Amino acid sequence: MVSALLIGLAAVAVVMGITIAVSRSVGRVSVVDVAWALMFVAVAIAMAIWSPDWHSLLLAGLVTVWGGRLAWHIGRRSRGHGEDPRYAEMLGDAGFGAAVRRVFLVQAVVAFVISLPLMVAGADDVRWAWLVWVGVAVWLVGFGFEVVGDAQLAAYKAQPKDSRPQVLDTGLWGWTRHPNYFGDACVWWGLWLAGALATGWVPGLLTIVAPAAMTFFIRNVTGAKLLEKTMSTRPGWDAYAARVPLFFPRPPRR
Image 1: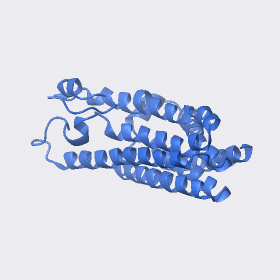
Image 2: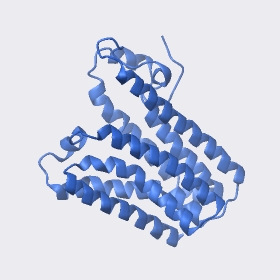
Image 3: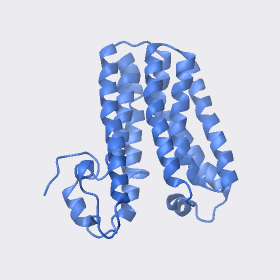
Image 4: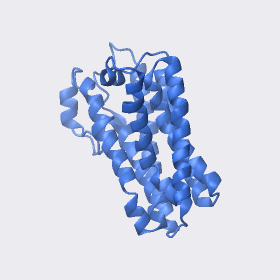
């Protein structure tokens, strides 16, 4: 287990070290959003190389598909734009050293903690194979929410502003105000089930902090709640928020 933790730590450190160098070169802290997904991919691939059994290879495939798509999606969306307003507000006039401490190192530590189920899977044998496939099913639900939600949002934004609805409230966006963030949470609960809990109760309980932390951050800190600070100023938002839940989906209400 110690070896797995050290390998995972090294993978996170390499990705974040490269990201810090790129950020300093281009003058944008927001490149860390692409690195966020790639840190998990690096850990999963490192575990599969170190322990190349079917379990680690399966997890590496799931994480690479999820993380690769997310990194590509964020990178494409931010191309040609300046600094993300979230980081500009957070850092103010502070120098690059503050960005390293407040953004890069914090995200590296969080990514390492959330990657714990992947490291456990690399170090331990599968005890309950059926639970691996339950986790894969939960992962598929989450990945579907992300992909479909992003596609529906892109189609909405492609409509002329003067003719499209004030807010997107159809499809998955009529079930939850943040289907992509809910999908993200499901992905990591699925990876926890398939990765850590499938190896035994003790590894599962010791690493449950990983999906719980991911869910907490994307719902309450860096994801849904933060995004709603700007979205809530749009016309028609209050009526939409009264009909549609913030995070956990439910059937649409009139």
